Length: 243
Image (cartoon, rainbow, N blue to C red; front, side, top):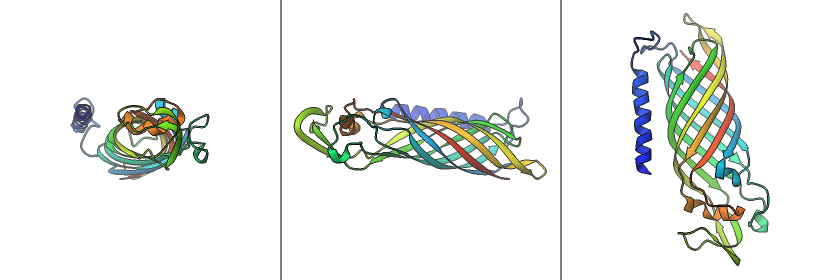
């Protein structure tokens, strides 16, 4: 798994290096940028995908990001967000006190880069971003009836009368990528710098987990343990640009 992490680091580093180099074919690719910093806040829906959708329903998300521009189209970014999703409804093995299944929370913290396909000093914003970092999952303590999870090397097994109490509290390496579309206004200064941007964004967050960590939670829903998880936040936000 560590080899995969190193490959992601090499790819992100190479792209960042190439993006910061001046381009003879594009006069806009210079070190100077009319925008030096930007800050944004956002909120919307957190959509669990794949195996994660078996244990969590669509929920909400809030987040914030900070960007530092190395040239007019390329910025280094740091982002953080918080997702909150309710337990999946339906038949399960949770005890009567936890019949609905535990809520699932996720904290994302990543760094990476954003590349502007459009001129960031124009009214239209269209960009893509890539990043890497971590995600921390967290649930309240839950109890599952009629299952035995005592063997850590295998999935929990059906065992009438048995009971297991656990949580799903784990931190994993994660990568993310997405697209942002927005409209900028309140332009000011000699370079007509847009001070405010309203935007909509869609991202994919991929966390590289371990199946053994999700055994008890999966047993509560009667599904297979899962490792890699995917959440797609779709958000609306506001970005403040600082020249």
